Length: 407
Image 1 (spheres, helix red, strand yellow):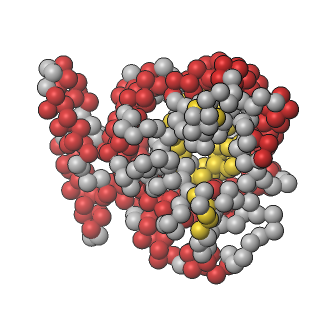
Image 2 (cartoon, one colour; image 1 turned 45 degrees about the vertical axis):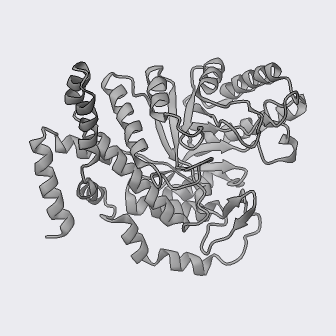
């Protein structure tokens, strides 16, 4: 009997004794879906430089192959987000078929309105109507890509902002954004949604047009009924209580999705859970709290990371495993015991209820779930022993003509 099997039997018995329906728990975990980003598999860097890695994907086809490998060993990562024009191809029907052959599907489409020189002073917030029209045409292009690939999500992040007081008319920029987002909403396929992401600073250091969740919520509501807010874990000031924001958006039925990642200071390119996995657990706890009230909604769980130091595929697998762990622990919270402690104003016991779930070693449970899904008990070990990295490091020599990367 393997250690994982033995550990699972012990854990299952312990969970039964705690009154947990293990079959339902496993079913919930098998249904988990985590979308990985194509750009997380290619070379990337910082404003100071790009650091190339052996085996890094050079085009969308290699990115899909890497994403398929992550899904193969984890069992929960079928959707792959695309970034346009980084992942632009001539035939999106063929790309959709290629993804299906690899065992994955095309996920969210991410427009890029921040790299072109025309967007130096903004896209939808630009003072020049011609630039705003250019941004809108790109949204139309991405909506058509959604139609061709079957994507149901357009994920929107804007670098728009200013660096100096007086640089721009802030009220006018707000109005420009309202108009542009309303027009984008009207371009969406009828069964699709758009998720509006926020970031409190960078690259603008005086103001950002969509700086926080309140602004994102305002713009989503003004855009239309199929617009919601996207929460990127790395796009907040130090110490911000993200799970509190999540709770509010859930209760407003306005939370459309996440970009999972981590950071110690600013921005978001560390692997999820590498700094603060407890935060991810508390976020999932709030989602389960809302779900119990019938207000969980349709949430897209996406990773957004660009791995500069760690090998690309391994870093993605680490993030997926951490997200699975946080979710599994959140499902173990004794919600009745928590409600009882809260009603008695027993702060210590309330916290201990959460900690009891958090402290549970769910690795045997997740290994069993992955086995049920036909994936690997230990995805990272399986990947390392597969020889996949050696093959891609040997095959992916040099640059491909027409290959695109944000780096």
